[in-house]
Image 1 (cartoon, rainbow, N blue to C red):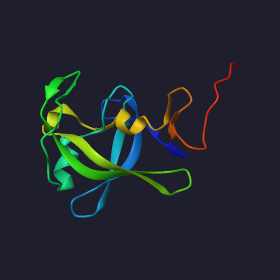
Image 2 (cartoon, rainbow, N blue to C red):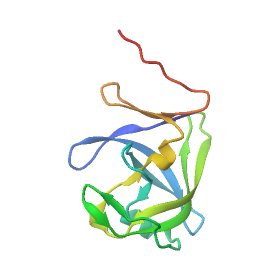
Image 3 (cartoon, helix red, strand yellow):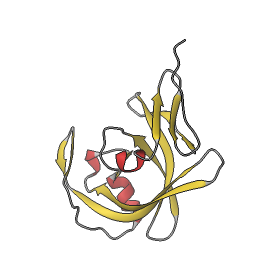
Length: 144
């Protein structure tokens, strides 16, 4: 399985590895959302802007979220996140995911190791590659 991403250039001019996915709302509608591929993030976290569009019940988090900006308020939501494979079919992840309550803490949702851990993650800016590999796909590193 291969899920391909891209190097997305944000408003600050910096290119970051992103996978474009979809997340299921409380209304049963899939909405598109970019996810920053963050190999240092323990878990997948939705931005406050996305949380406001989800219309899902929220639950108290089990743990506190912290990062470079310090500890922040969060909630948990139960939903599905899906990505397109190289064949066009979808791969779906169902679970409880954290979401930030304050808009200034995160401007893009983060894809963390709770999902990334199922894949070999390739983030190769010089090679213009962002992808997740699993099942029958693999990669080889060779010296040229």
